Length: 368
Image 1: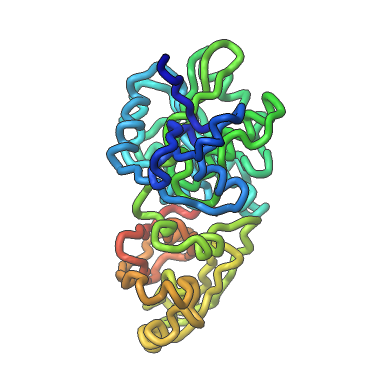
Image 2 (image 1 turned 180 degrees about the vertical axis):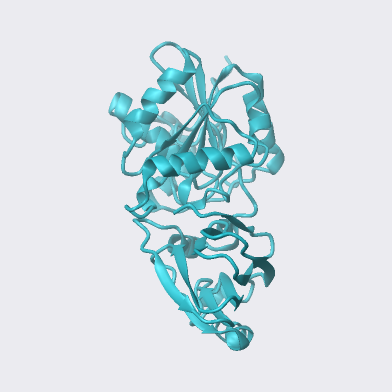
């Protein structure tokens, strides 16, 4: 008799006992348990250790392409703190004719002064500019449980008795969101493995709903322009905010530079004395210097005064690429994908942002 296929309850991978380096590996002894968990999820859950699993961009695209072939509600999750970095380009094409509910996660990281309704409108506007017209926009903190009742009610309203597919980039808190739904609906805790690290869910995990339909967790799509892919796991903990961000305000004269650890820098070239408001993880140190000293300081202090990257990682850290911008409108954010943003309130500044090659930096209408 053929053995029944067993899937890991953490990440959805097909369980196999042959190759420890491939997805879904579990020792034979694990198969005797009622709920089987692969070694990768076990290590993640109990030791917070991540193991990379070989999934190509093609694998992710195949999974995304499935969305357009089903008749379902698609829930797209973005990280509010890294809205542009966690946006999936061309997502409206993958979703096909299905309605999309856009959910901004990690709202607990935004300063309390930010009006939530204004934030939802801002997200709707940004989504429209990026080609997506969501059925609705909601803000939640999956980790804290804020806004989850409203999110669950909206999912129920828009799915019309159909399956639900939850999609998003790596690191947006997608599995935390689904775990929270399961916990609130059934009382079960942490059914899906969650972690800080990019790429935890390996294949679609179906969670049965009461009416015979299912809620599917899809793997986090890797967005290569996110800063997360240029840092090690210790540095990721520094740049990933855990609690409400405290904005850091710098009054800068022309020809001054701000370093964000050693990961990025902002040169203020001209525009008279003015203030720059920095929204980054509270754990990331910002260092001010004169523009004329910046290159020399970076060469000498990367991995020392300018951390992250740490000393060991500094040797292999990619060179920073310069992007110059003229700020023509008031209330503009200079966005460093995956790191945060700097707000300039008046027009007329000329700045240069430096980021590792491949990381995106852009201007947008101010979020706050």
